[in-house]
Image (tube, rainbow, N blue to C red; front, side, top):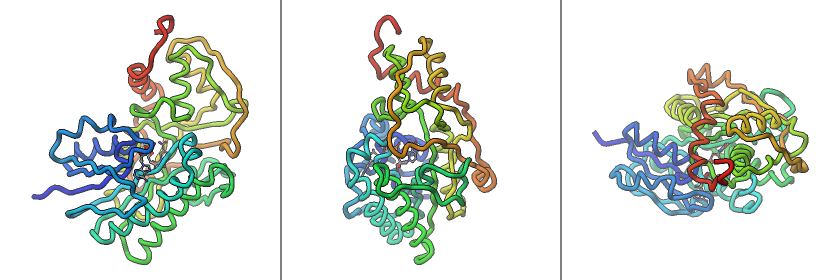
Length: 319
Ligand code: NAD
């Protein structure tokens, strides 16, 4: 029997590379496509020797061609951290809009099922808490984060239009903050920032007063949720994230305890439109996918710390 073939865009990125691993493990033929704008071939170099893995260096905002059949497309290409999308806002808008359109066309052509990586950012700075999928969000389209949030909202609308109008099989996952090995140390997000600052013995940068909350999901849990959603028959958006919520200040304390360093903090101004509260309501994922997170923060952080220690130059006195 021929293997099922899956195209994973953004395959050299943090989440995309973990998805490549999972689909290889499940016995698929995996085609990763990436223009490496924020990704890194190191994340997938262990797969290059496999005959069931191919890599295409390509920008999906341009015409996308893949020879042969395709059963599934997972569209994960997009800058994902504020530090990236603030630097390349137009590419961010293009990959969410033109890139999504190109891939929906490819899916239609091939009769493939397409899953898109949406985000909790579609809820903006939410006025309801926790956020369930029926909440329409509170996004500032012309603020600095608009390029990302609105690209993702457009991406969802375009995907639903292909589903409703062309009967294309589509899936939408709304991903909440996810962490784990292969995150970039310098991607500007709080978890890698705190871990690398603690490992270097530097003060931890807290934006605002640290009372804002985040909920962090370990990458293996996220990948399991995505895998189940892809194989489900559910076309409306599904939140996948870990509801365990923590304030940034408490999180700083947790990181210092984990790394065995004394808590030192440097307060900085809160960036514009930074969400105050973030917590997924995962009732839908539980009901439809039978999914909930299995890895708690203590365990997930321990695994992530091991990866970061390998990547970072730790000063002798804190090593
Ligand atoms: P990442 O930056 O590590 O990976 C994104 C990948 O997409 C990179 O390898 C990059 O080079 C590639 N890419 C960007 N534009 C491209 C283009 N035009 N053509 C081809 N490749 C392109 O980010 P990530 O954290 O792995 O995020 C992956 C996806 O998940 C993104 O769509 C992001 O919006 C979504 N997401 C991530 C999180 C999270 O917590 N990491 C949360 C919500 C949503």
